[in-house]
Image 1 (cartoon, rainbow, N blue to C red):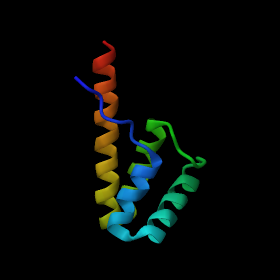
Image 2: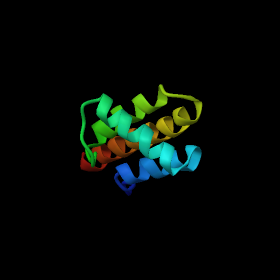
Image 3: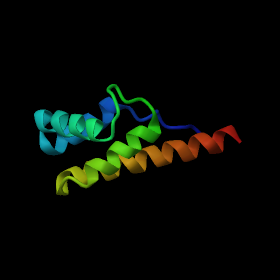
Image 4: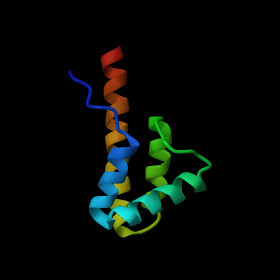
Length: 85
């Protein structure tokens, strides 16, 4: 079983931009990163998940992108653990 590519901050911001536009996506991402006391670039999947959860609380469109990212990260983490065992 192949593990999907590790989710990245770029993927997350791009997905958010597809829904709300690039400038709004960057702004929402930056605000979420700051609100959680993190720094860009965000690389740790656990931190990406925290940001996804934060973004989900902002509004309807961002909820869709945040949920999608969260599901992708959870899937990645689950498959990574399965392949290791």
